[in-house]
Image 1 (cartoon, rainbow, N blue to C red):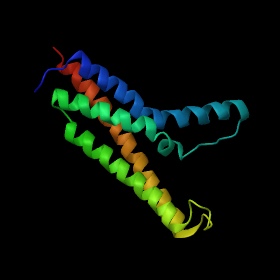
Image 2 (cartoon, rainbow, N blue to C red; image 1 turned 30 degrees about the horizontal axis):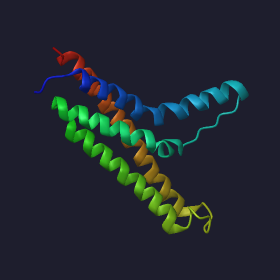
Image 3 (cartoon, rainbow, N blue to C red; image 1 turned 90 degrees about the horizontal axis):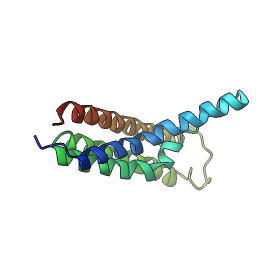
Amino acid sequence: MKQTTPLSRGLAWIGAVLVWTPIVFPVLLSLSFWIQHRIFRFDFLMPAELLILFFPGSLMLYAAARQIGHLASAIGRTALFALLALAASQGTAVLTGLASGAREATGWPLILTVTFLVIYTVFVVHQGALALTMLRWMKTNSR
């Protein structure tokens, strides 16, 4: 077991915030819109759109995990699978014509595209859970 340092704690905290943002932000926006207008609207595409936050957060979590010697392989695999699922979703949308509008958004192409998007979102949540697990581990094992 390697030692927990201020750098590893900082990377873990910032990474956790960045990884959870694509999940928490759409929920907060939906709640805000519901409170203001009494209409429920949820943007289920936002976790994919916020990849720009998820990916750097995952890299920070991975760096912290490597530094402390705990959960690095799980964090790396989860980030890889999330990116592969998102690429599969995007690829399916492009190959079937959903992305360009050449095909109507119905049937098996839509189901397959959304399924890959749901799988991506599940991996993002899993990465967030791993981040919380690592932060808890760091708290109990710090010297």
